[in-house]
Length: 128
Image (cartoon, rainbow, N blue to C red):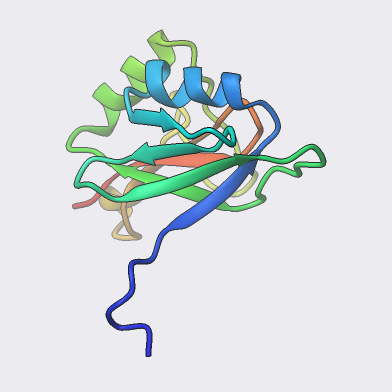
């Protein structure tokens, strides 16, 4: 029934202008805004994600977007230089940069988490 439909994901934010600045300028993602104040993020590869304003927004307690990178250290350094702070989670064995190095341990990707201005969790990750 849905095999020929276009699907997309969306998430809420509490400040569209802050989200537009963060995703467009800080992260360098293509961002457009419609007449109703919704943002469309066009991710590398062409996938579109909707960010919409919500007055009673509650940040997602899970990762809403993962950005796969070739070199996690370069990505973390560049984002840190742009003002992004990386999250620390108990039991995740993250290094000084906030990177959990799963490749060396044979436990998945190298990954580091950060939040957008609305508190939603994002990540950069490097696969083996």
